Structure formats: C-alpha cells, structure tokens
Image 1 (cartoon, rainbow, N blue to C red):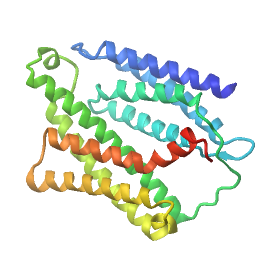
Image 2 (image 1 turned 90 degrees about the vertical axis):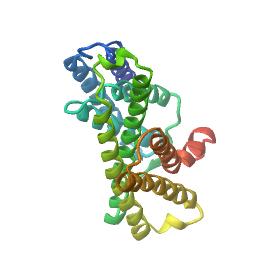
Image 3 (image 1 turned 180 degrees about the vertical axis):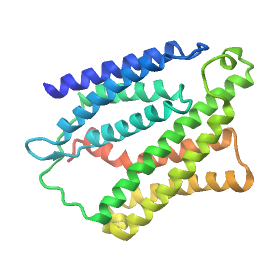
Length: 268
C-alpha cells in the first residue's frame, strides 16, 4: 500500500511540474522557477523514498528491471533539475518529468520479483557499475539536449517568431552544452568499458556478449561524434541523429534483455 501511495504521489508532482513548464514554455518570462523547484523537489523526494522502500525489502534487495530503471530515471531527473538552476534547460524539464511520471505509473503494473539476499560487491565491480550508470545518465541527458537543439533549430529555420521571444535558450548555448556532455559521457563510457574488461569476468561470456557488443557499438558512435566535432567541426542535424542512435543502442545494451526477460517473459 505504501509503495502505491508513494508512486501515485510522485506521479502527481511530476505531472504538475510538467504541466506548469509546458503551459509557460513560450512565454517571454518562462515558467516560474520557484513553482518548478517546489513541485520537482516534492516529486524527487517522494521518488527517492519510493526507491528506498522498493529496493530494500524484508526479503532482501529487489534489483528488478523496474527498480533499476526507476533509479536511473531518478538520477537523470535530479541531474537535469540541478543543471536547470544554473543553465537554460526549459525544454528538457517537461520531457524528463513527463517520462518519470509515465514510468512511475507503469511500474504499478510491472513485476517486482528479483530479490537478492546478500549483495557482495568487489571494488572493481562497484567501479564498473558506477562508471556505467554515470556514463549512461550523462549521455541520455546529452541526447535530451540533442532533441532540444533539433527542436529550436527547426523552429528557427521556419522563422517562428514565438521561439525568438520565448524563454528557450539560445541555439549556440544548447549546442555547446550538448557537445560538452557528449564528450564527458563518452570519456566515462570508455572508462566503464575498460573497467568491465578488467574486473568483470562475464563481459565476454555468451550470456552477456550482446550487451558488450551493443555497448561497444554505442561507444564507437559517440566517439565518432566527439572526434568529428573536435577535428572536423561536425554539427547540425546529422550529428544530432547520430547521438540519438548511440543512445538507443546503449539503452538496448543496458536494459533491453532484462526488459524482455522480466517484463515480457516474466523470467527472473
């Protein structure tokens, strides 16, 4: 019952924050930062309490697909919210808040059965997991910036005056932050893969080979974008689409097989 209440409360706060930002998106003064911070803080706190109660159960630690997804989502929401306090990210907020609300609501109908009695993690494995989570979150945020860049660029090319006088950030600022995030995320993904090959014995095993291959493909795509940007000045629509493809491959690597096994096939 507590899980359901916390989930619905978090959904309501995220939804309210989404509606507030969307309704003021093209206003010259933009959404009220105070209202956005209050609603998002309430959502993030209830989301955190939900995670604590969902993961740490009387039977053990529940590390099911949905709990890992909710944790990753929480890190992304927290990061984007923190970034928005200093840098313009108006267009990203309704995306992450809206997605969080949908994921939380969907979690009420997804199975939670993967219980681990005792988790013994070695330093190398902890390093790999931490680097992987950070790399994924930063690259997903970079992908959101890519979507924001594409949206603003498209509206500007159509000579939409609403975008010019809106509270949305300048295109050049979004582009600069986008490639900074991709560079940092790619560096972290490089370290995550290296630590995996060094410390994790199952990286090249038959069971996990598809994850490793997809991760390497995603890394190659992001690395190409980074080097293309710094060496040849790549920019624009093609780079944005390439970043989205890399993010899709990385998501499949991290969550694809677990989603199929746990959510669709109910295998734990």
